[in-house]
Amino acid sequence: MNLIGENLLINWKQRLEKKLQEFLEGIEPPILQSAMAYYPLQGGKRLRPLIVCAVAVALGGDLEDAITVGCSVEFIHNYSLIHDDLPPLDNDQYRRGKPTCHVVFGEDLALLAGDALLTLAFEVLSDKDNFRTLEADRLLLMIKLLSKKAGAKGMVGGQVMDVRKLGELEHISLKKTAELFSACFMLGGLVAKRDDLVNDLERVGMNFGLLFQMCDDYKDKDGFYQKFGEGLKDLIEAKGQEVASQLEALGLLTAQMQAILKSFL
Image 1: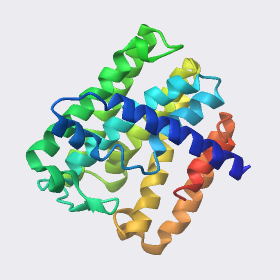
Image 2: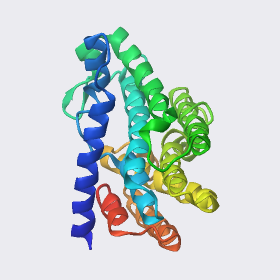
Image 3: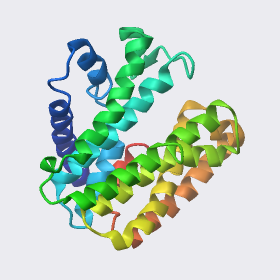
């Protein structure tokens, strides 16, 4: 079962990366195109767009449309990474073993490349010609959802709380990390036209995002690890079981979703 799921994810990831490359073609001037493409075309797990695909397919949605929606999410994720790495925030010199965007292209161009990726996400999502089964009213719902989850009420709000040390760790993690994961689950449901499940998908997505952050902190010995130490392993196990139960109840604990979970647990 896991091998089947992993092979499907490899195929989806290849198709996703081809689509990302297509959306990043023809941008002028070329140096902006290079800066915009630097993170999105480096590879990585592609967890967020793959979740969109896994949910959409499990619920009967069109895979190609899910891949396109996933590209929008991936552009937003990568814009946030570029901005996070800048000197005023995390001041990171390396990401994925390579020099960060501002180290290669300069802080000015990195800032603008991040801006351009954010706007490209909504350019892709707002163009009905990019989709096979989704009408304009449904795309508008998706734009509203994603802009809310990625903006002041979601990811960006969480980043501000993190930078200024405002609020409890779990609340910060829910906004900074989990809100965008929940958007992926909800977008997958909207691709499949299962509006009746959107609230349930939001709940499991928030839990999934928190699980991901706990695992990431355990690996980096940061955040939740600093608070709970090795006891975080027990919390991760319990949260993982909770997420699996939620997924199973919604018919989403497919081979593909199990492979996604396995990639970071």
